[in-house]
Image (tube, rainbow, N blue to C red):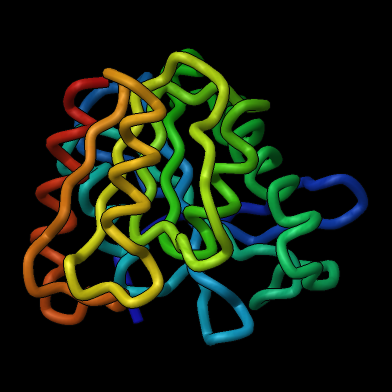
Length: 211
């Protein structure tokens, strides 16, 4: 479990409320911000996941504020899990909430997700128009993926031993997205990033610093 200190927040999402943690970096506001989406709740995923924590650290290291949140029906978040049908609305609600915070530069809100969270971020991104989109271990097993509409920069990062995120499929997605996409394949890493959190933090921080 990741335990980086943050401020508890309540995120309105239609007729439900989602729980979140808002982290702010050292320095003077306003800060660029990023939403971080957690892995699949039916496999134990929540906002305290260690990979989510690695993405939060990347944000803070880059001078970004980070908002992590629990999808509907996870932790203290209200609602019912819908298998990915309504969860993109959770992502949009979190982005709206973060952009409205007084310490955030509303024109520089990026989006990131890990595994299921990456899939939900990919679906939500065209409606959000983030400053950038970082997708970690994006699942490819459901079939061909299309790049999201928009001109925002795209980072795809996965391990070369990831059984759920095929690097050849990611390469095709990056090629379809054109010059705005960057693919990073980390040697020796599987879907769960055990022992490789620091490499993920470094890779994601380098991307955020370009936004």
